[in-house]
Every structure is written in structure tokens, then in C-alpha cells.
Image 1 (cartoon, rainbow, N blue to C red):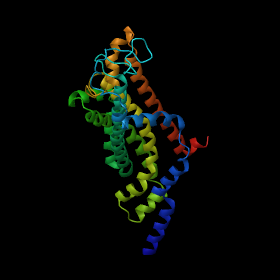
Image 2: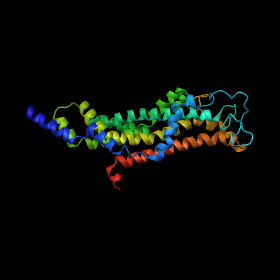
Image 3: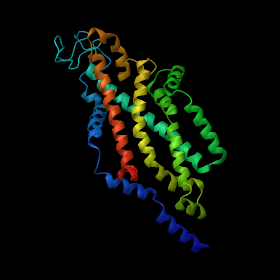
Length: 305
């Protein structure tokens, strides 16, 4: 019996990609990083991390002596200390954009982590355990998918109140369903693979099989979904802030900046909406491009096209 067990373990080690295989795949294309999305995202990340050192003014206080609705530095009537102009309270638009990047990226990344954690866990449990567990999880997923995501998020935000961390939890709770469906499908296929069967024959517990053999082999799909979800979460956060149920003022958020400037767009104060709109567009575009690149790199069929 011991001889059979050792044989099984040897075959299992050879057949299962596991964590070592995942590491090899990452090292294989680590030097082929996408230039365009990283060229957009890295500056935004650096600005968000070092916002306190980079921002010329406090984003919540008016610039001393500055007039309201001052245009950008290159326009007539500009305030020389406010490079991208001021808003209706005389606050520096550039400083608010910089701190708004921090808010948007924190919400985008943390909301995606929450969504990915919930969806990946439920997808693995549904796919591996099957039976009534699968039925219950999938029926909950179907019911969740029947709800309009943004409307549901607005409802939840209205119920619990505006707060950055509330928004993170709400958006994570709204956008987990795609992970659950995709990961479940991956696990249903993995469950029939030889290395999983051999591990079960060797007497490994379900938890050990999931952690050692299932989870490493679904992380590729989870990472692709995460890169695509970040942009969706950032847009959702901006929408909630635009509607007044997201990050509460005076905390700067790109969505609330759009809301503050929309009434002034028709009278020529374009900088109040154009700059935050451009920031949202660039970050979301970069995350989508990064997601496409990950999908191509991690899918052998697409990589060979």
C-alpha cells in the first residue's frame, strides 16, 4: 500500500502544474509587459501613492486669495498658482485630481479584491463539491445577476450611507457573480483532470486538493477577470459619487468632481468636467487593455494566433 501511495504521489507531482507551474508561466512572459497600459497606469499609481507630497494644495480647502472658477494656467484670467484652474469654492483642481486618483484606485483595487475573493471562493466550492452546494450557489448567482448592478449598488449605498469603505464592500458584493460563473466552469473541468483524481486517490482532503491543485490553476482566469473588473468598479464608484451616494464630500473623487462641474459646462467652465472625465477614461482604458493582454498571454490558443 505504501508503494502504491508513493507511486501515486510521484505521478501527481509530475501531472499537476500547481504553484511551480504558475510561477514558470509568469516568469516566461515577465519581460514582455504591455507598454501602453502600464505607461498610463504607473503614473496614476505613483501619483496616488505620493499624493501628499505631489499635490500643491490641500484638496478640501480653497486656495488663499484665489478666485473661484479660475481657468487653467494657459487660459486668460488664470490663477498662476492653480495650474488646472479652481472650482466653485476656489479649490485647486489639480490637487483634487491627484487625491481623486487615490480614492478611485483604492476603491477599484479593493472592490475588485472583495469581488474576486467572494466569487472565486464560491465558484471553487460550487464546481468542486457539486450537488446541492452547487445548486444553491448557482441559484444565488442567477438571482444576483437578475438585478441591475448599478441600480443595486445605488440602493445599497443609500441604505448604508456614503463612505469609501462602504462603497468598496458594496461594489465587491455586486460584482462577484462573473467570477463565480467562470471559476465554477474551470473547476468542473479541473475536477476531471488526472492530477486531481490521483490526489483524491492518495487520500488528500478536499481542502488540500483545492488549495494545492485547484486554486493555482484557476488563478489565471481570476487575474484576467480582476484586470477587467477594476475598470468597471472605478466607473461604478464614479457613478455613485456623481449621484451623491458614493465617497462623501469634501473628500475628492472624480465622480463628485464631474457632478460639481456639470452645471458650469454650458457657461464655458469646461475644465471642471473635462479633466476628471479624462482621468476616468484613461484609467479604465488602461485596465481594459491590460486585461486583454493578460487574457492573450494566459490563453495558449490565443497566444499562438
